[in-house]
Image 1 (cartoon, rainbow, N blue to C red):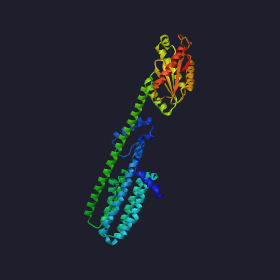
Image 2 (cartoon, rainbow, N blue to C red):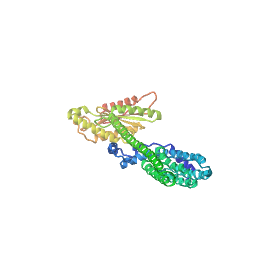
Image 3 (cartoon, rainbow, N blue to C red):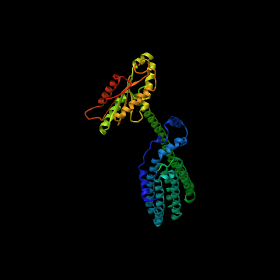
Image 4 (cartoon, one colour):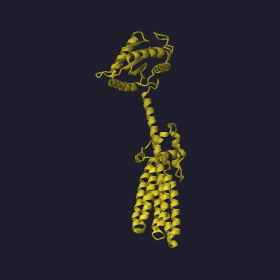
Length: 424
């Protein structure tokens, strides 16, 4: 892998982008996921592992931050390791050059290369195993340096350096607990063997030393356990917060939609129309595009209500609304109930000729419903009258011009015999 590519990966590692945790979960599964989260929060288990789906979510969320911490503090640990050369110069000047060769020219470049592998996305899932390789290398160099120093008392301090491994793993780098526990036990086992079989001294001294080191490692491991457990609980609460946030947002959208809809016909209501026609007028004014409007009124609807009853009148309006909406195809077009038996169709970027053609299709669609209307003087079934207006908005005007023009055309359609389309 080339250096620029590695540096690019390092830059991404040091500047992680936090993704939306629930991005991979369907909203329909939020309820079941919330049950799993609450069950996990109430669990008394000491295991640091969630149910499979929660565990995969946790690892995906934790990975960027964990990899950044591994990379930074692993390099810090390497630097701290190199500082031991100062002690080597003081305690073993006769073999200092050979020790430095091992530490600075072999072990340091090798461990640094392994640390940089953590920055490669494809290898990040093996980061804990890479840390394990680093641990083995660090312990192996202890044996090499012991061989260089020989059996002198100076070997004791070099053996004690093994205890830095559990400290760094659990406190500084904070490797995932299960791996930190494994590597700490391995390091301590090697330490026990070296203390018992290579260090000269009375057994009570060795036992006291091992007990002290065992207690120190235990504190470090428990600290790591406690921190990871806390982080996992915080993740569960964050998930709950995200679920509640998404659910609340969906509820708000639903409420907004309901507040903008006419409960009888399901079309947009008058308030929604007023807001949208204002926006479309401004947009058409800015772009210099036409804006057209159709006003529609159900002919002799009061007589229909009086003869067939309000329940039948409501059903009639539903059918008329459905027929009108069925003729409106484009996503930007708006079909709304203006009030009572009046409906409007707003047509952005549509000239008046095309708007008149659409109005005629709506009139024919309503007529083809063949809803019986004995009190109509126009036809034996329900019909509608439509007025159409269209214009390119002017700076000195307002959308009320368009509404007034369509209303005038509707008036002419009603006075001209009804069941017809008129344009302004």
